[in-house]
Image (cartoon, rainbow, N blue to C red; front, side):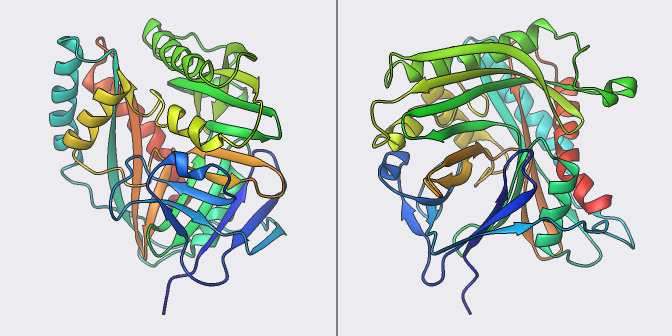
Length: 349
């Protein structure tokens, strides 16, 4: 029996979910973002497109809206078991390797990701995890996708890659991470003081996006950066609004934008090749992007951050962080731990 083909998503602050179903066959497989020109459907793109790991487009045969029910905590008995005993050891090796490249001047920035494996006593219904994420994270884009090629993925992400319709579009530069503690949790992070490292990291991403947009439009505006909250973390965000003479080249624009330095590094091509050759755990569909493309006359594509791959009662959780010359291993490890908590919380609360 073939795996179901569907995606269900909830845009930030919306009070309903949208279900996209493909009634027969498998999703279209593409080998580059440019092939998205003129297409519509729910897109699931990996960090690295390669044989066996294509960009997928779920055909929107049926599109429907659904209320979001209040669901109980995902796990009522027992606690998840951490299966990632060697994770800290492998991260230390990767960090030393990556940081040496920064010290030598090979990269201005590079993103190091890792995977943590969790197992629950019994499998949790993925839809229950989706609805629970909708309740816990109203500020984020929440999506659950299932295809034979990718398996089942759940994401709760704050990072817009591209959204809009017609001639009006927007994207963001999101980078820099701090964890809210104590009284800060009652606000939106308005009292956070940002370090030079975080400010520099965000500026790198914003400059890159501006350079990409210049290839497609002479009419764009940047606002920010400002502090935005995502779960118990805050980030620095700049917003770009722009017009396009036609929406027929959306795939070409995505080809230019993805992957942004927020999930890759600079110089982009060299950092990308270094990551896919050296990172301990392949990212697969983590730090790719997903979302509706020209569904109900709207496009909402988000970078696949804070996500998990679900296999029965095992959950592969992914997170990463941007490294600069002055990054320290312990600080970066703690940042990934804070980001992993977004998905871990779904399994434990």
